Image (cartoon, rainbow, N blue to C red; front, side, top):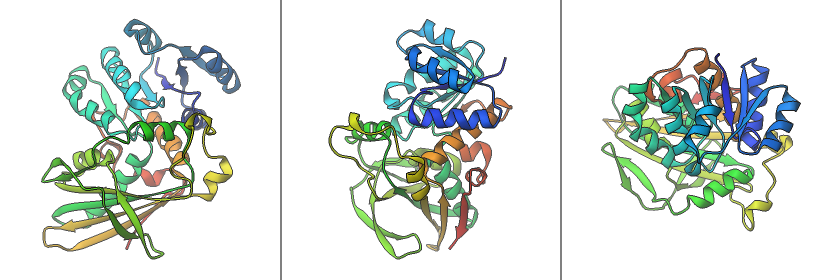
Length: 326
């Protein structure tokens, strides 16, 4: 039996990923902790479900029986990635998730050799900004002969989902980093200007997981990551009272963009711009597509990135994503 399990399927991103997977005729099983909510969604979608928590290795193993690929959509991932990555290795299941938290990627690095020995792939960030920015960075690197530095900035538009807001808040104390000479190095939280095509805008330095994934995919030694936020990017107050996530109308009104600057060994700079659908729409579609392709046999043991596995054109296969050279 070859099936894709979506764990955290009743969450905002998990539900959308399940719908996209079904539309692509991918055989799926819904997974999560709450049997009542899973049963309701499974009945609506006409698919199987399995309810299990993450505090019992045997229960996880039973839940993963007959599953070939696990898509973890249950954030904050600092609470779920460790148990599910290790369970995937034990049970011979390829793992991917939609995490934007650095710890998930550090964990995948730490488990790389163990996963390779088990013939299991670990792909945190199978959908979302890591897939977007990995493709964009790869496009920029292809344009120069000896790339030395990458600066990449994501334009986040519209509001956050409840889960994303909670994850972001719980990770606020994470050290701000950049990659220098191949090593992750503390960085000042500064503001720099970038131009997405409508004039320069302020962007602030953040620690994105792309500091790990872009480096693994390209080998470029110096990498910096920034974010520009418009709309209700960072919510205030009681986050538990937020809606699940932006409505379809809000997603349609708030497309995402990203810009990459690649500097070669002579100091010459090339720039490329990505334009795509709203980040939540992209994440769900990209994760479902990655799951479908992995289920079909496109997998490589160990820690992998979307651009590294599927190629730099992966993002452009999702919705109406475009990349242009400036």
